Length: 267
Image 1 (tube, rainbow, N blue to C red):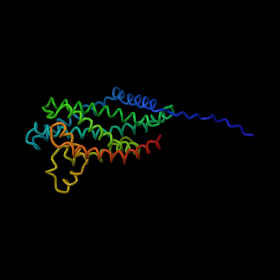
Image 2 (cartoon, rainbow, N blue to C red; image 1 turned 120 degrees about the vertical axis):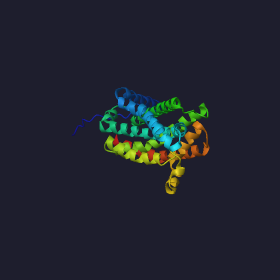
Image 3 (cartoon, rainbow, N blue to C red; image 1 turned 180 degrees about the vertical axis):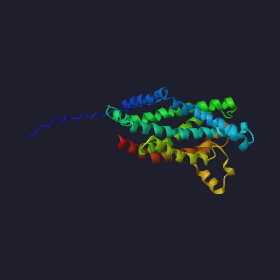
Image 4 (tube, rainbow, N blue to C red; image 1 turned 90 degrees about the horizontal axis):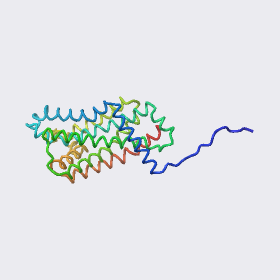
């Protein structure tokens, strides 16, 4: 007779409250990492300010004839550009945790399997809020003026976070599929850069060739930039905001299930 020496595995169901607590713990871990990684603080704070200064004072006079006029036009677009480019950090951080074995250690703990992914996304959402506040505040020092209201600013922040969160699922999928953080950056940057620079974020599409103007009119970044611009300095809001939310829903519906499936296969 053969006697099995294997120990029985006890399955323990993790409830929603415990899952939420574990998610926030891992989100805090991601935020605390900034203290030990000054380069992330550089990406989060210095880089947006650098882009704002460069676009305003190098290109502003040539594009708008006045750096002040261009600042009013470009800052909402730079907010959008910064938010979308920062979704790359979610993908890079996720891929780094996987390739360095952090997720292997987390998997050995009695925690919800979704907590590492959701914790990373929540932490990066807080970073998005910080970047928005920093960029608007520094822009106001340079001369940018909100021409709507506090409600408009809060609405712009909320819309930007919602759309960036939805589009981050595409970056998450890239982060889970790529073999290294360098490849994540190359692939994701190649996808985000054409989206932002062929939109109305930094220049008016009226100057584009006809074929490029046609694409710009359906580009999700164009609608998001127009909506943020309307919420901050006035203009059409409802249509652009609705289209932005529809695009966000589309990104979430397509990429979230794929990203979650890829995440479960990796852990």
